[in-house]
Amino acid sequence: MNNQMKNIFFFCLLLIFISTISAQQKTDFGLFLGGSSYVGDINPGKQFYKPRPSAGILMRININKRFAVRLNSTYVMLSGDTKDFPDQVLPYKPNYSFATNLLDFSSQLEFNFMPYITCTEKWMNSTYVAGGIGYTFNLSGNKNFMTIPFGFGFKINITDRLSTGLEWSYRKTFYDGIDNVQSPLGKSILHNNDWYSTYGLFITYKFVKFAAKCPVYK
Image (cartoon, rainbow, N blue to C red; front, side):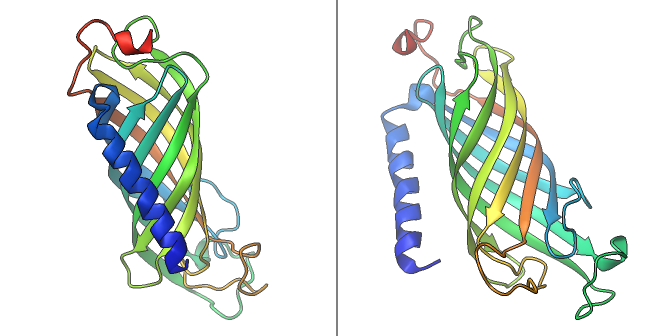
C-alpha cells in the first residue's frame, strides 16, 4: 500500500476517534476473544483450519437504531502445514509449515437487521452485517498490508450498560505472503490467495449512560 492510501486510512481513523469526543453517550467499549484461521496457498478453502487464539479491543459508535461505526484492534495468530493437504500440489515447498502473528486494525460500518440500541430493553438484540477497511501489521517481520474486512454477527443487551454477542469476520488481504508461499499465478490482487478470519465472543460496556432512556435516539 502506498503512502497516500496509508494517510487516507489513518485520517479516517482519526476522524472517527475525534467524533467520539462529542458522542460519548453513543459509544460502547469492549473486548473480543476467540479464534482465527488462515486460507491461502497451503489451505485452499477449509474453514476453521488450525484455529489459533485471537483477542482484541473494540469501540462502537451507535449512530442510530440501524447503523453503527466500529473500530477494532485485534491480535491474530495463524498457522498452516502442507502435511494437512496431501492433495495440494506445492512442489516448490514440500513438507512446509508456517506460524505468524498479526496485529489487525480496522474501521467498519455495521448494519442492524432489527432496530437495536444498547441502553434499552425495547430494541435489545439484532443480527448484523459489517464491512469496511483495515490495515494489518505483520509481527513476524514480513510486509504490512491493507485489508477489506467483512462479516456478520449477533448482539444482545445484558443490562442497560452491558452488551455481548458473537461474530465471524473475514479479511480479504492485499498481500500474498502471510504463509510465505507465493501464488503460482504471480503477484496480483486478483491472484492473491491469502485470507484470514476471526470468530468469537465480544462484550461491550457503555461508560456514559443516557440520562433519560436514550432520548437522542427517539
